[in-house]
Image (cartoon, rainbow, N blue to C red; front, side, top):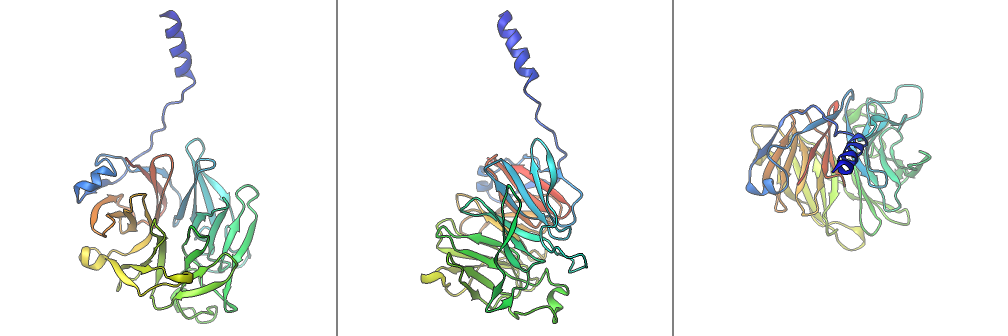
Length: 326
């Protein structure tokens, strides 16, 4: 018994106590199926502050840390349990000394199939590939038909290697009203294939923003951050990367008529539930598009990312948040 007691003392001395974080908001249950995903009493933890507009989170499995953008601060930040939030790359986008725009940095981030960071680079009007070790940036694509993109905003990668990304004007010097810098009139959605060919596959959307693929890779979803048309659209993927006619998958104006919600970024979990950053948190939909619950931080939210540590991470205005999933 004496030896067991000594071992328990030694073990406790080398096992740091879990960190405690302040919490905010609440979980709102709209359907019993939500309780299978998250405990109604789960704490929404504040794990980072001092940002301007947090965006584009992605979990890096090889290293167990989160990366996310602040396009207004032109910085990519890193967060891990041991060290908290720290600067990862600055400038993340535009490197000139003169003012370019209110959002010169990166926005959406993913880890591609080669394990490299790929960023929607507002300031340089391109998709950039960033080596996680050296932090060296290279252009992946910066034009369509010899015209510079507006400001790529969010992206995803298909299992076949193709990239899909949105290109609204939010990173241009005059945003929607820019007439001197802008070279492409459409706020398009693009496909970049494995051999470097880029195509504008959707041209009739007002303000395309978040983008994601269904888990089976057969459907492309695009969110509109448009107060008049606050939809998440769905498009069947056809041969050679083409898309079918768009359909309204989720209509926030119809579902939440009194709140003025519209989606920024969104993600699918492994079961096909959709987690959409909208309004004061995350709205959760089942695979059929029915709202089943909300993660209401009370803070205007931009995007979210699932992690292998069992949490959903959320970028929300000036804060980085997380909540534990079941």
